[in-house]
Length: 174
Image (cartoon, rainbow, N blue to C red; front, side, top):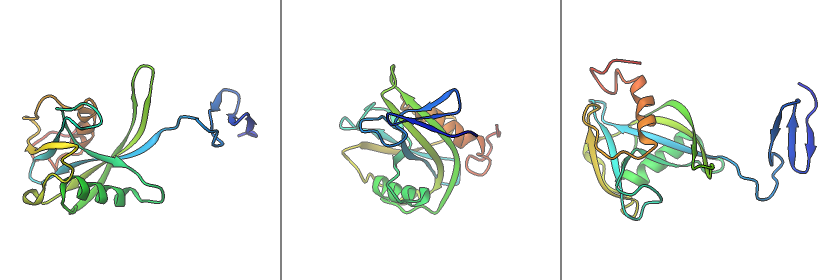
C-alpha cells in the first residue's frame, strides 16, 4: 500500500478511494456503532418490543433491542447495559452473530454499523424499562411474528435465524 495523501481533511488511499473527513474534519458525517440484540428464552421464542408513540422512529412497529456503543465500552458491556435499560433483566448468555451496514434514507441521512447479538434472558423477569420508547413486550415463535415489524427487524431476525438450531428448536439452518 502506498503513502496516504491528506487534502483538506480528506484522505486519499491509493488511486481510487477517498475517506471523507478521515482526519476529524468538523461537520463530516460518520457512521455510528450500534449494538443490536435479539433476546430469546432458549426455548424457541424471541422477545420483541412495540415502539411507542414517543419512539425516535417507526412508532407502532415491533422491534428487537438496540443501543449505541459508548466510547471505551466493549460490545458485550454495551449489550448488557442496554438489555438491562430496555428490559430490566440481566443477560444469561451473549453471543455475537453478525454485523450489518445500515443505511437509511434517500439520500442517506442515517448510517449505522450494527453489531448483532443473540441474548438469552430469563423470560419471566423482563419488563418495560423505557416506557417512553416501548409500550408493549411479548414473546414470539419464528412462525408467528407480529406485524408490522420495524424496517430493520427482519434482517436482524434473519441473522438470528441463520444459527438458530439451539435458539429456535426445529428451525432449519441457513
